[in-house]
Image 1 (cartoon, rainbow, N blue to C red):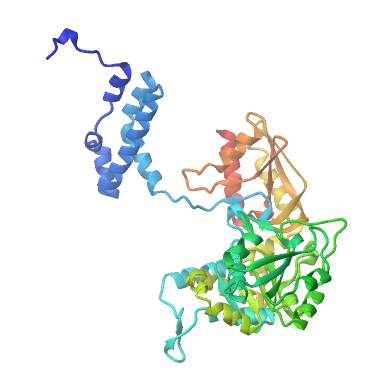
Image 2: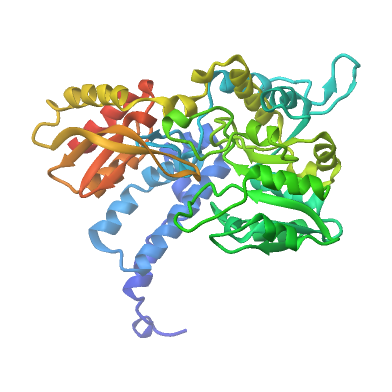
Length: 481
C-alpha cells in the first residue's frame, strides 16, 4: 500500500462527479417519497437516473461552481419535473392560427362534434362492429360506412382502409399485382405527395408493372392506346393534388379514357387524392374533381382520402364497380389495411352530415366557406380587445391576406382573409412565435402562427370561436414575459 502522501490526487472532474448522490439517497428525500407513493417508485427511479445521467454529461462538459451547486440543491425538484415530463402527453391540442385549413402537421381536418361524440360512444362500449344484429351472426365491418358512401357517390360498392396510399396500393395489387400486370399512367401524373408517397414506389410495392406514357407536360389518348398489350390490366389516372402544370400542356379528357377502357374491357382507376364530395367552386376550388362525378362519368374505381376535403377521420376510400371493390375486399392485404371502430364511427357521422345536407357540421367545409368579411370582424374585435393591454409592447393591426386549403389540395388556390398582424417591440417575431408554441402550465394550448417580415400573423379562419379567448390570453402572456 502506498503512503498517504504518495497517493494520486483525484482530478477536479472526478471530485465533481463524486458529489452526485446515489439514486437511493435521492429517493429518500421526503418530496420524492411522496411522489413515489403517488406515481409508483419504479417511475421515480427511472426519472432520477435520467436526471443524474444528464448531470454527469453536463459535468463532463464543464458544469461546475455555483451552477452545479444549484442543480444539487434542487435535485428533488428536477426529478419531480422529469416524472411529470414522462407522464405528460406528447400529443396535445393546439390553436391553429396559420390559416391552413387542412394542415398536415396539425392533424389535417378537425372532426365535427357529432363525429367526436360518436367516437367516444363507440370507443367506450361494445359495438356491433362485425355482428349482423338481424341474423345474429358474424357481419362485415365495412357495411357501416358503405351505406352512406354508396348513396352519396352513386357507387355500386365501397371500402375503407387506413389512408389513400393504402387504397391505391390495395387497388393496384388486387387488379394488376398478382401476375405483374401492366398499369398505364401518364408521366405527368407520377407525383409525390407528402412524406415520400410516390406513385411509382406504390406501384412497385403493389407488384404491378409501371408503363409510363406521354411526356411530363403533354399526354394524349393515342399514347395510352399505343401502350396497350396483352399484359395491360388497368389504366390509372392520378389527380395532381399538390401541384399544377401550366403553359404548353395536354391531358386526355376523363370521358376519353373511360371510352378507351371500355373498348379494351379494362378497369379505369382514378386516384382523386383529396376526396371532394360537394361543390366548392364558389370558394375557388374549381379544379378539384368531385368523386361522384368521376363515377358518373364511368370510372371503374376511385380512391381518395377521408381526412382532407371530405373533412372526416384519416382513412382511404375506394368506391365504384362492385366486382372490383369485392375483389379488393377479398385480397388478404385488406385485413392489414382495414380501420378500427373509432374510424368507422367518425366516418359514419361525417358522411351522415353530408347525406342530411348539414355541411356546417363538417368543420373543414365550414372554415373553407368563411368569408373575409366574417373573419375580419373577429380580427378587428380581437385587436380592439388586446390593444390597450399591449400598448408599448406591440403594434397591432388588421390587413387583408390569404388562407390556403392545404393538405396537398388545391395548389395555387387562395382563400381571401383578414389577418391580425402583431409587431412586437421588445423581442423578435420569431421569439414571440416560439413563446406561443410553448405549452402553458395552466393547460392553455400552444398557438401556431405565421411569421413574415418580423411580424406574427394570426389568421382567425382556422381559430375556432371558442378558442379566441385562449388565443388572446396566450398572446398577452407571451408579450408580458
